[in-house]
Structure formats: C-alpha cells, structure tokens
Image (cartoon, rainbow, N blue to C red):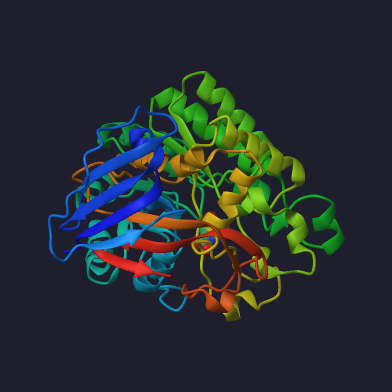
Length: 437
Ligand code: DOR
C-alpha cells in the first residue's frame, strides 16, 4: 500500500474543476487530500498543511510538473486471448502506463471474440493478475462479431463489460443495430460504433482520392464512414439509445455529429491522435505503418476534427492502439493489417493541440479523463478524495524522440518514427505501484 505526498505540482482535475498549484496526499493507496495553494479558477482553499500521517511517507517534488488523474483510453486492442504474438494484457498495460494511461478499455476482436461471459471473465482475471493498470473489457455487440445475431449483452455486462462494440467491423444490419441500441437503454451501457459501410469501402486500403489513384491502391471514400454515422445517429434518435461513435476521421462525420448534438440526440464521439496529426500523405512510399482503418484523410479533415475537438463535438481522444507483428506489417500494402500502435505516443501528440491553441490543457485532460469516464459511467479519471490513487505526473517540457524499437508495446507499428514530441509522463501511479520513467 503506498503512502505518498506529491508536492507543488500543477494539479489538473476537470472532474472537480481544479487547475492550480497544490499537493496531493495518498494514504494506503487512496487519495486522502488534495490541497490547492494557487488556483486559476477557484478561490483559495483552506490552507491546512497536509500532515504526514505515516512514517513511511515518501515525497515527490512535482514543482514545474503537471499532476493529473491517470488517463483513460476507451479504445485499445490488447489482443489477448488469441493474438498474444501481437500484444498481451501484460505488455499492453505496461505500454498504457508508460503513456500515462491507468485505465484502458479493450476491444473484443480477440480469439475467441469477447462475445460471452467466460471470455469476459478470462480478461478480467488475467488483467487482475498481470495488468499494470485497470482493464475494462468491451463486449461484442454480435456473436463472433459477425453482425448476424446479438451477443448476450446483459450477461456480459453483469460479468464486467463496460460497453459494447463490434470494433474492427461495422454492424451492417440496421435492425440488429436498432436492437443493440434498445438494449443499451435497458442495460444502461454505451454502444460504440465502428462506422463503415463495407459495401462502399469494399477492398479499400487508404483514403479515396488523388493519392490512392497515384499509388494504384483501392480507396475508401469518406462517405463509407459518414453514411454509417448518419444511420447510427438516426437509430439513436429512434430508440433513445446510448451511442458513441468510434475513431471519427472525416469532416462530414464531425458535421453530422455536431448537428445531432444540437438536436439533443444521445451521441458522443471520439477521435484518435493520428486523425489530427497526419494526412494520407503519410502513406506515400507505401508505408504500412500508416495503414489504419478508418484511413488517414486530408488536411481539410484534420482541420474539421480540430474544430470538432474545440467546440466539444468530439468528446474524447482515444488511441485505437492496434498493435501488429512486424512480419504482418512487412507484407505488401494491400495485405498488411490495419492499425497503429498508439499508447506511447498519444499524450505527446495530443499536447500539440495545446501548443497550437486548439485546446487548453484542462480541456485536453477532460477529453482524456472526465469525458470517457462519464460515457463509461466509471469513477476512474478523477482525483476525488477516497478514490484509488491513479495519477500521472507529466513533464510538459521534456522532449522525446519516437523510436518504435524502444516501445514497451509489442506493436512497433507507428507512422511517427523519428518525430520529436514534447511532454511525457515521468511518473505514473497505477494499481498501487509507482512507475518512474
Ligand atoms: O486500424 C484498425 N485496426 N482499425 C480497426 O478498426 C481495428 C484495428 C485492429 O484491430 O487492428
């Protein structure tokens, strides 16, 4: 059980409206006290000194550093069970903790698929034994993610699934999606939609446009995403269900979601760092590390996504951490799997939004803690007194060069190799352990 005093850091916790210099006392692994000395937004709180209640108390001087709740990544692929050669619960959660995340939600496209309570139970057990951070499983919407028959959503929820998604695949059948959204109301869980009209994306491997034409690769038009975003929002309106749109990549999707929110429809959305950091240009040279689904789009889409983040249309930044084996990514472009290993670059890439003035630091932390916590209805992502101490301490000025070989994730598939990013976690406190990087 850890006893710790974190002193003089800039504490940011959107769940309590905190942004100020202060101290956090952790006792027996739980947050005992948060004291703000100087705040941008709040009146000074009582200047009671934090008493050292335990002899073994260690102190961390966080002067000049940012102290925030451990980040929540509501979209990762941990690959276990079944694809342990790509990633395991152990390696994936170490990568999470290194990236500043202390809660990750794992997608069900494992083998077997997490479409029943016994797979859910396996993931929860394995994560309890070997996970370095909290793992919240996401169950499949349909059996084997085939889109044909609903999975046992209620039983999986009781076993611990926090949300439901067929991620990696869309639910093409509108009636099944309608039923899933109806169930989402009954069981009070979000349905996370991978929006892709497969009849349009066909065998596409990159964004449809001049580059797909030049490279001679099949393109995926933006409409393949947007049509399904529109369909699912219509179904959310029809059912009053609880809809979350995964990995938004296009301008059109942002517009449809913005309009739906204005009309009061129950929809939330996420994007990933690669969709606001790089365009389809990254694929020139047939770099399979930039092959991802949905595909990287255009400058215009990036601008729209940034605007969507800024005005709150996009609630969450998630990584869609999709580790693959090097040999798979070495295949020719058409044959290589989709996906980017994202946990270890997400924070550095996201902090660029603050530098560019798109988001304030507090707004960014909100999209990485409070907003996913609200969607998932969990108490994680908050420094409230009494919560387990899940905390990340970030040096906003520390630069690091992205070198896939140094990733602790098994997935070395990044299109950001060689990039120099500013801002990295220096200490992560997760599941009662203190990790220093
Ligand atoms: O790029 C992707 N990779 N997109 C997905 O939807 C699935 C994921 C994976 O599982 O590799």
